[in-house]
Amino acid sequence: MEEKIMNQWMKELGPNSDVVVSSRVRLARNVSDLSFTHHASNEELKQVGSKVEQLLEEDDHFQLELIGIDSLSEFERKMLVEKHLISPEHTQTNKHKAVALSEDETISLMVNEEDHLRVQVLLPGLQIEEAWSVADRLDNHIEDQIDIAFAEEYGYLTACPTNVGTGLRVSIMVHLPALNMVNRVEKLMSAISQLGLAVRGLYGEGTETVGNLYQISNQVTLGHSEEEIRENLLEVTQQIIEQEKNARKLLLQEQEVSVKNKVYRAHGILTHAYSISIEEAMELISNVRLGIDLGIIKRIEPTILNQLMVMIRPATLQLTKGQKLSIEEREIYRAELIKELLD
Amino acid sequence: MLCQECQEKEASVHVTKIINNKKQELYFCKECAQATGELKFGSDFSFNNLLTGLLNSKPHSHHQINLSSKQLRCSNCDLSYQEFSHNGRLGCSQCYDYFGDKINKILRRIHSSNRHTGKIPKRIGENVRVKRKINNLKEEMGQAVAKEEFERAAVLRDEIKELEDRLDNRG
Image (cartoon, rainbow over all chains, first blue to last red; front, side):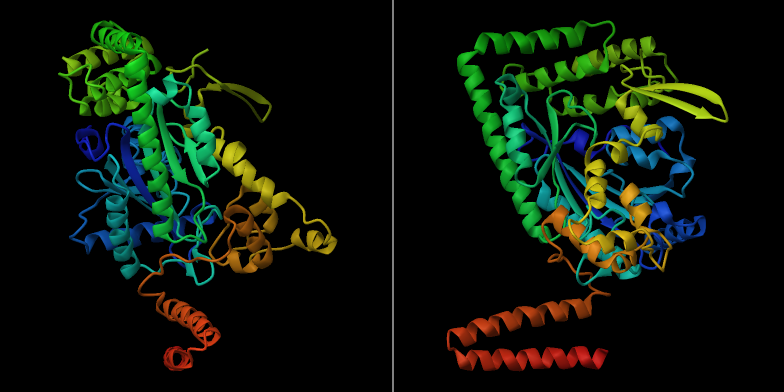
């Protein structure tokens, strides 16, 4: 696997990118007549793998490259997690796990994850419909070649009953620095969770929020159509965008000095630190990003911050450097990298 | 203490393993504990925990159902209901049939619904699609009758008949 670091959501800004970092659509599918991954025999898992291999060989539209997880180094596997291309659970090497990626890494097809197949499309900014349409087309292509477990009553059958039905999880990653500064995030989040949506930290379930980044996704997959699920999330997202923008305006009006101070100090530390931890870096990157979006800082491209978010993480950092680093060395190299990119 | 896996974050998960009388102490941050699989956050905390809680909660009155559920097993993949309620994962697509009513209840609790209304796969779902169309037409016909639009109802009836014949022919 070539070690390219950037992919599309890191390089480009999508619509509403001042608040929405990325949009993701995921579909859970299983091959009919084979046991679900965790309960399957080695032979069955192999069969899933070869079905996908055949599928991809005959396809010239999506052009996905199939990579066996066991063919990757530990760092390479972790980098895929840091880039949100595979789940943390998908880094195990013993279960015929694989991932198929498109050239720009917007599409990833996980093989033998919790479900046999997990289609994921990840796009920059607010592009739920666009991501859905790609995922839907790939899903049709898969269904055309492989018999998928589906029942009239329950829809697409999945290993965990929380995914059954549409198997669809739509999620958006939002950057909410202003709402956090005016202490309104918690309230907002509890309102959101009452609408059948889940709020999580940057790296999914069980992870903490860093750098004012939140992931919001639908919880319910059965009983609503794919369209209803998308619309629901889209509506909520639009309200979040509006609230965050209002909070930003309010901050500029009422606390201009303190906001500017925060932004410039963050920029100052990021461009002058000799060594920096990931948590501190994420907080400061968030402040600088706010500064760019408010027009306080003008000569930095906002995409740089999307890139930094992934590049400063441990595995990606060490892959970029090309060697294993101690924690101290990592913090020094992280500071160097940030300086370089912000200059 | 720092996480021994990434040596980056504060360790917040402490695992003590005793295997063959050999004790091993492990310290991880949340993310690494999840990634290494030493502690399945997914299944021990958060959402899954909630789910297995739901699975294990006993129905109020039906004592008999509880007794038999211990022996309930999927005949296709041999997963027992007990295993399912322990880890929250079904063994194969047929578990949905073999665990019938119980699954139905669980789905209603999780999703407030037990009926898929979304996408139907083109190739293997043709019959399902036709059936769904028939149901929709029947509903429409009912409404037409209620509004005393009998001509429209008759048209709908014929359409339903045609679709039903198509299903029968296909078997």
